[in-house]
Length: 130
Image (spheres, rainbow, N blue to C red):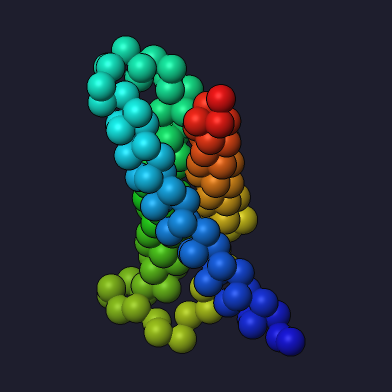
C-alpha cells in the first residue's frame, strides 16, 4: 500500500467521522429539546451536554475556517515568491509544503469536536438510563 493510499483513506474516514459527529449533535439537541419540552426547567439538567454540543459545532466550523484561512495565507506567500517584478507568475515555481502548524490547528479542532460530541452523548444516554 502506498503512503498516498493511506492518506486518502484517512481523509475519507475523518470526513465521515465529522459528518457523523455533526448529525449526532443535531440528534442530541433534538433529544434534549423533546425531554425539556414539557418543562423548560429541565434544560438546566442538560447544561453540560448542551455546552459540549456547542463546543463541538463551533470546533467543526473553526476546523475548516481556520485551516482554509491558513492555507490561503500560505498560498499568498508562495504566490508572492513565484511572481517576478513584472507581476508574471512562474507556473513552474516549486512551492514550499504546507507548514506543520496548519495541520496541527485542524487536527486540534477535529479531535475537540469528536471528543466533545462523544462526552455529550454519553452524559445524555446516562441520564436517560436513570
